[in-house]
Image (spheres, helix red, strand yellow):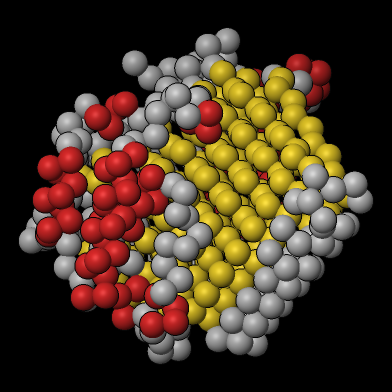
Length: 416
């Protein structure tokens, strides 16, 4: 069971430079005053974190020997196991990618400024260890995608990965966060990423969430965009027993563009919850949110997207599109796109559908001699591929495609 004493003792065990100590204590105090989110909060009405209260969670044993095979990644890799750095690629320029503790003062002072309203982000701010700082210089594009791999290995651990990204003016990069686990060990990963895009900067950000039946995953991404910057995000929720993904994008200056694509696969008894908050805080800003979801077995998927257009802004252009497939009579999907508009001169719209596989398409494939299981898999893959454009643009389709195909729901699969 999670207790205040556990958190306080955990805080005492976290190493780090002096500049972190006061901030950690303040963040922990703010979290303890609020506690874990619960279903009385409108934003958490679909998702309960009560299972965390019943688990015997702990910080990972810092002295444990970690033996973990690292697969080949098509880019520069920084790999963590139970919050310990176990591998860092040397092909990137010095001072561009490294430990958050070593970040320069102007960069590290941004820590926590985009995620102050989240209790889980405050807990992360108190307990993160060996965080990552990515700072891409102005007018520079790394020739390789940058991969951050966060793996859970020990049983019953709570991990708090922290990522801070600063894209200087007209910088351009591809960042992939990969969350996974060693088998089906019970654990909780509570991740936070804060991303600052300076004028003209561009970031392609892919998040891949995998994990077995014992995985709980919460993740908050905060993005602040300055003039003419572009944030392009792809979220793939392919694993975990319970996962909650939040993206908060502020289009703070004119010309900023945000593209948020996502896919969730809630099979078995998985519970996958995705929340988007897009704030058009300046005139002539653009956002697109395209989400695809599928639920089989007794799984449940949630898409909750809200676009805010502030008073006095002009020319905001926002679209949301959520389409979902129910693959079992026991599965459930909730789709809730929302628009909150306080300006007249806008172009905004949204749409959401929840349906089943096209029986006519299945019949057509069967009439061509394709067996039912193969036909079903083809249609599911085609549906998922509707949001995989950023993977193609980033040159990572070959790396992601096998994982996507393996995660597609199997007919009749229900976890006990």
